[in-house]
Length: 175
Image 1 (cartoon, helix red, strand yellow):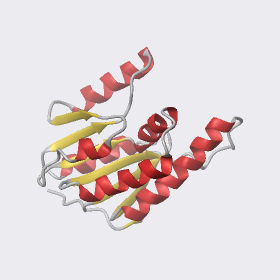
Image 2 (cartoon, rainbow, N blue to C red):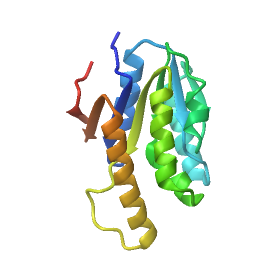
Image 3 (cartoon, one colour):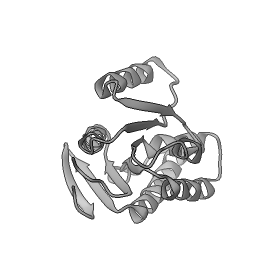
């Protein structure tokens, strides 16, 4: 059984293997698992993606669907459980679309992660390695995501960047 630190941060590009890697970390603990889903389903493509992810995880996960309020989701977690929060990028998108104060919501997220009794693995997208987006909303998102990722990395005990399915440890050490 692998022992994870209090907060693990898994970062990667789209379809990099970051979620599968994060799920593997959680499963390897042997602890009861909680999946905090931040996505909101607006179309058939997203509905199919959610169905595929649920099927791939299997029945050994307790799923909490919470697109905005991480304190609400994480306060339910017991000390013996391990949480997979997937993903911080969708959580950020939800707050941007709701026109919430991102600095306030980010601080609330970091506080909720610190207060959680269980261990948490947070998945997030790295969006700053590509071209500069051609519109203001996308540029604003890229900047906000970069700031959020920096805060999550700073708060984490273990930070891993996944590239082409290969984990690269940025901070801490793998169990």
